[in-house]
Image 1 (tube, helix red, strand yellow):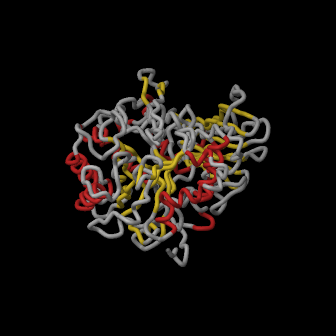
Image 2 (image 1 turned 45 degrees about the vertical axis):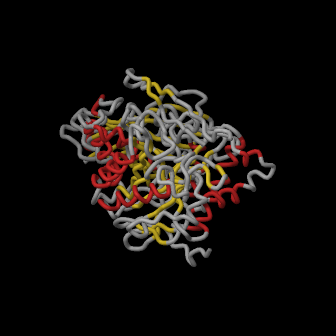
Image 3 (image 1 turned 90 degrees about the vertical axis):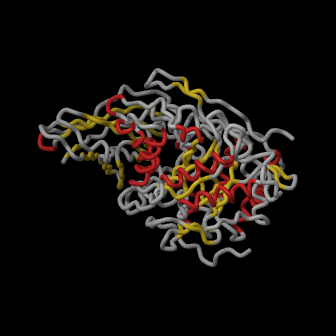
Length: 551
């Protein structure tokens, strides 16, 4: 049988540090529905549980995971990647602004050994609160900040150690007893912290893993029950995410993507209504599969997904979360696959919370066989890739003032607030609209001083025929420290902000407001900070006149 996944290594230069050559994430793969479809809402109160195919909050309201994978803790860096380039809070802010409501955070058992994270940038006060922390301490900071702005986190036991993926949940060096002990430790660590909604017990079990065969050394379903009960024994509020295997009764699929046995042999835990099944699904940039070359492709895909994992949702057996799916989008087949899968996952506008949950692979650009939502500079958004996901993004959790993950169609949504996500550029051609065709010299926009307490200066970083990226520097021009700042402007020629970072950016019509975040509003006299944004523009962008006010 052909190998179902391709092992790749993506080497990333940590440009801002100039110190490291970093190994990036790779893939080693390969009844009756509810009568009504309650909408997913923002409250998402308390801890979550399951009912049939839905995930519900503590008040019984349907919620849906629509998130992103941010890897790194499972690698030899022992920390989420990219904070060699940016402040971790600005990354999480950008995830939220783009409409992702959950972060899947892979880790390996190595981080329980007191590992020291490498490749964190502390220059200019960046990531200052991470200094001196071990890997778990940094994870705490990421979890707590994500929770503070209305995101949720799923912890993913990705590997036994940083050396690579394993077929089974244990290895000779990391026995099952260690797996169990560490699952209990991390469950206890986040006891009482509703930002963590659950634990993905092990990433991508594959041959010789079986489902329902009864051999405790290889039966992943039985192992998931042991692991899940261990977690719930110390933290009964968590969801237990259980991935599929590779082969069931002679039928093979993606690693972690075969849940054909779950209907006959369900995972049964000591605490009811906690199991969410998880499937992984990929395109040809990861590996070739027979269904891609079927003459009926893509019409054949719904039946394939139904067979491997979709039936659990469609028969109202359990919720299904697509924990990983991704592609470089370089081939027409991959573009068609992603569009077809998004359609299958049920648009938010029609189905609300009664839909498949998902976390896209990946946020990171240094995934060798898929790339990421971010481009190689760790700031610019691949608007084409992100745009494919627009229709299935979902509301945030506990977010009372920011964006809620809707989509922008060139106008405004959510009461006139831009969601930061664009539907533009999602053509099957697969060419990112964010590809630059030249960089401007960077003209400055207008700024104010005096009683406003701050000045703002515009710089157009990159510009192409349909869009741009820009940065704005905010400086304290007063004699006292600021607590908060706000920059406003009006677009001169119908531009539309599609994503931003290091500020809370909202657009209503042509008027834009960018407000400081919790970590960058305080500026000493003469101190400065900056934020960035990306947008669409027809023709040359004239820098807008900026107004800055501080308090």
